Image 1: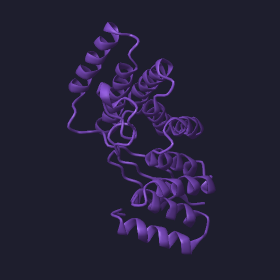
Image 2: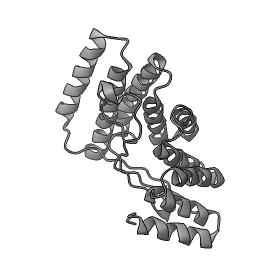
Image 3: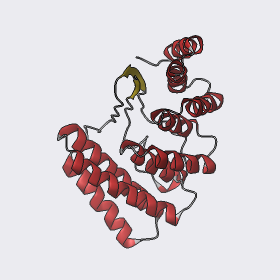
Image 4: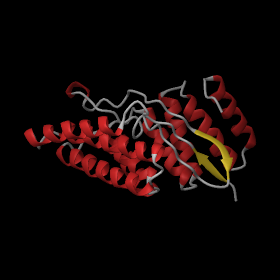
Length: 226
């Protein structure tokens, strides 16, 4: 049975990037994102390792955020930002060293920091979303869905989170749920090429060729390049 290849090109985890204090809770800044690009015999995920950042630069960022945490261990922003740095380091290891073990170690650290940010601020939508994507990249789609759902609870108007949860549903081969999420993303953002294209692939997986071709075409018209 053919499975969908999901290829997501991201800056960090689903747009995970350091935030400034005034940006806390703002999850509407869209990250650079690639999408499901073709059908193959296996599922494969990739994300942008941010080649402009060296390992030394990432270590420096982690050290700086660790110092911020030492000075104020109650600041969820510092934990979130350090989690983003750990995520970027994991992506660096994947892209440059091909080391799955070292990559997983960094993702585990990222998850721990996102979890602490959530403990300190239970309504931190971006922390839920970023932790969900960390789970996603480790193949734990159920946990990813749970975290994306919490992010949606806090910030239901964020179209990108619906797309990300749609990816997780598609990876679980629950295509009806994926289609529902892509449709909600389109309702929130009618020009969302990613949502159209992936909804088209979900329809294709279900054998609905007419709807699939209509959505794939619309996604391309809106700028998706396959």
